Image 1 (cartoon, one colour):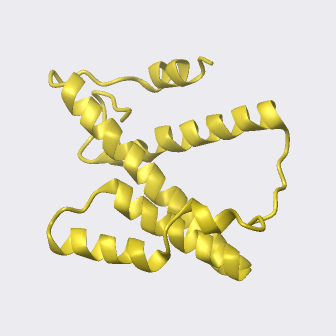
Image 2: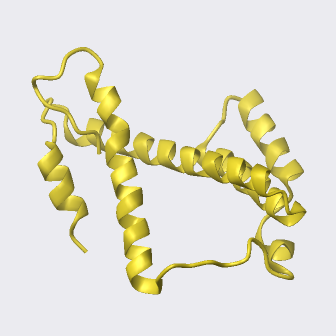
Length: 142
């Protein structure tokens, strides 16, 4: 959901657009903490990567093919980033894993924003924008 108000000028709404998705992510992380407590799992298990996801090379090939054919889509972008993160985890490269997981989060958040823009466009053709209070009350329901 993109939060805006009639008093916003020019592209100010774009500056606020990221706040709702970060709020939602924080809310979900808090929910996980309440459900399971602090989690400190190992980065990979003994066989976990053998069946979880195709290799980075396959994802990258799919990404390049979709890009070249003007068929880029969020699932391929996210899949490629997740594959890179899993490769870094399997290699035990903590710095690369950190970088890749930030990229996974950024792509996932961008996908959420794209969904929100699509829903906003579909539901708010009359320029009716939600307020921050509306957004917060909607996302605080469990």
